[in-house]
Image 1 (cartoon, one colour):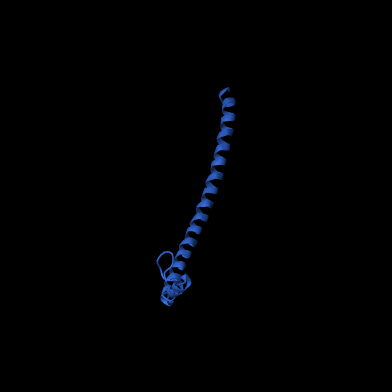
Image 2: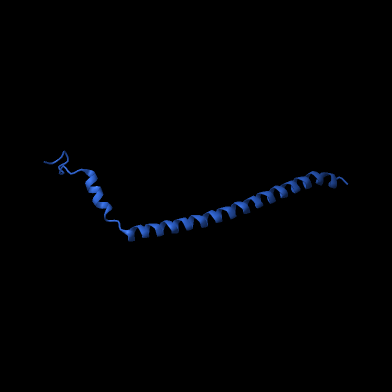
Length: 83
């Protein structure tokens, strides 16, 4: 007897179990290898991100220092011009 969609009264779980048998050790090894590659790429990206973050922090501090020096020069410039 067919179900409401015209399919046989076969439980869904039974069909899914048959698909699990299609994955062998080679497939799991390939997936594991891909995950290792992804992990390696993510580690590399994290290192680059950390390096860029450190460089940006240095640049920010340098810009702050330059701005302060520039503001000090502007503050001293009018008194230099009056002499």
